[in-house]
Image 1: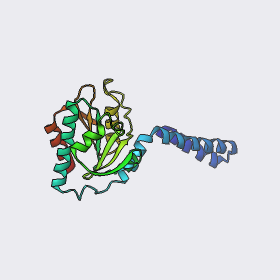
Image 2: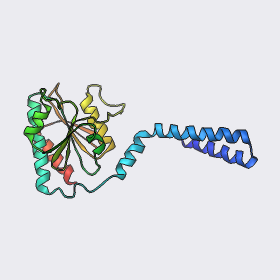
Image 3: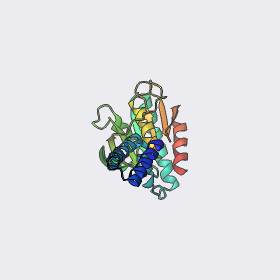
Image 4: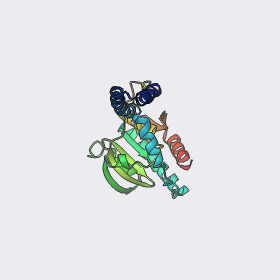
Length: 213
């Protein structure tokens, strides 16, 4: 991309120096096309950079008790869902706002509780598809759509929930909890990394540690 841009700049300078009208017209067209190509090719990086500009200190008001409550309720819900082989995807916001993904789902205003999370992901619930998003100590959305990762080295055994969890954490600093409906295994995604086969206690410790970081 850099080489192409340098060639266009060189041709532009040459065309203006020698006053070559035809080349000026061609370079102008190439410049417009190159901008579009640049945006398309680097769309994930540009989106990630813009998202990071929106970083805030929204977790600063979360006191230790709130963090412990959120990590406990989420881990307990994951344990119950795991035992029942019910699939789930839970995204926990940290400093990068998830408003864009909240808007894709059904907005809620409910204090985080394991019972509510289990009921949301019940197969009889109209909200069980998609992700639940937690902001602070509140569930702010359900049935939200998250971006899927396009990482080429992921195992083909990972389903849509796992790929969505990794995709969101590649673009934001959020924490994603996944429960597999096929195996019942609990997994955690953060920073684009994936940690599988966790128990409830390990999950609680990891969530609490990352929320305090």
